[in-house]
Length: 187
Image (tube, rainbow, N blue to C red; front, side, top):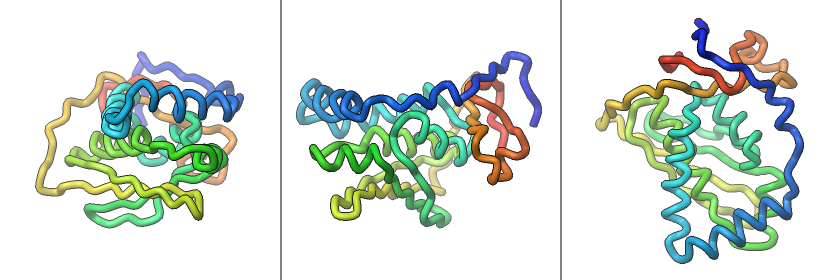
């Protein structure tokens, strides 16, 4: 992978301090719903898409790392088909949020849909299913292969690398660290 001279490297280890779950829940599940009211789910979905545009990621592995570092939870691809992908979101933060309120995970859904849309250049949307019993969130991500987008590539994109995970080949190759600047998406 070629490096642009404008790239910056940031050690993700400095982002390892976990925020207070109470503080996170207070903002995400009490304050924001009060501010947004009945339009909360739609606004959060589009806010997630905008957040993805602000932090365009290079690949699916970077999405997984972003979810972890952003405190969204642990996301993994559980089903991959040509036009449909199913992701599951779990973890301590997801369990904590589900125990106290009926939280919205539309911010995460919008973020995921937009990242995949930008990476694949296909119109993409995500649906959210909440399973309170198992405390797992499912995102059903669908892409329209007939509707190719002409998306301008961002001037910068972020490539994540968690230096603790040496088992994954992606990391062993020493790809790159957040944030990184590049003029093109590299696949």
